[in-house]
Image: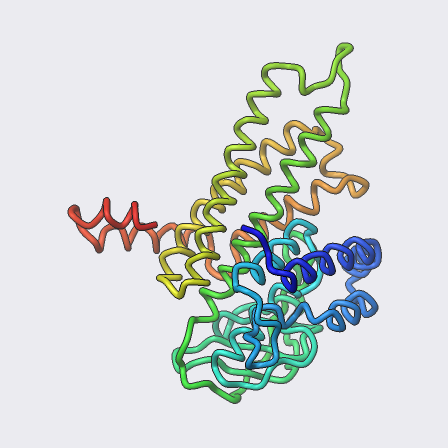
Amino acid sequence: MEMNDVGAMLADTAERLFTTHAEGIERAARDGTWADTAWAAIEESGLPLALVPEEHGGFGIPPSEALALIRQTGRHALALPLAETIIGNAALASSGLPLAEGPVGLAEHFKARVPWGRFARTILVGSDTGLQRHASLPVTAESTNVAGHPRDQVAVPGGQTSSGDGLSLLELGALARAMQMAGALERVLELTVDHVSSRVQFGRPLAKFQAIQQELAKLAGEVAAASAAADHAADTYAAGGDLTFAVAVARTRIGEAAGKATAIGHQLHGAIGFTREHALHRFTTALWAWRDEFGTQRYWTLALGKRALSVGRNGYWPMVVAA
């Protein structure tokens, strides 16, 4: 699907910013600090408003193109909460609440750890009554996920609440993670192909060995399946369809792909893939972390299973082909 002019411009801008500021963003992530310069450039570009409709101050690009920007953050394993801020602003706009100022932290419920909570200037909390919007909140416990990104417990008081209309923060956050994981898996495949094509053993590249080719084929298959699942979830969101089901399908299949793909990627890279000097571990650790955020792998697999059981024997096949 071709992007419109604005969508293509935003995609090019995102790629340039993520590449230009990559070193500074990674340094800040390792040091546990905030990449001020990179975030200021990202905000100035308007990327945090990508999923906001034009009538609410956004760009008015198709939702699928805005979600493709979130996928780009996954392709860079971006150590900044841009995906959360894009999703958060979309949720605020649809709920009739003011858009966020600065980076957004998303909490799927009141006791959840908040991604980038210590740096968030706006925190959104999902609840049964709707969406709560808060200014930055006190952090009661700092921690990080396996990728080294902040995941902080915050004190959540009562706050400005929407009417409860619209999609849940859990679904929206899960959609964002699905897009990011699809992007990260693409990079795992690219890095692995590059490595086995350039690494020489016994006088020829690793990619020339049949056993390596078989593992690459498995890896490519998992990445293709994950990409298709992410595309379907994005299309469902854009069409206003059954996002709960589409996200359950995407997170179940992409989570499975993440487990298999990271294993193959590290197997074919050997020990170098775990070193700080090599990029692979940034993507695999991000995948492991994202797989269990906004609903764990078990949560979404069970949700999909319950849906399959609920439609009964006669409804199962129509449900499968509708997906």
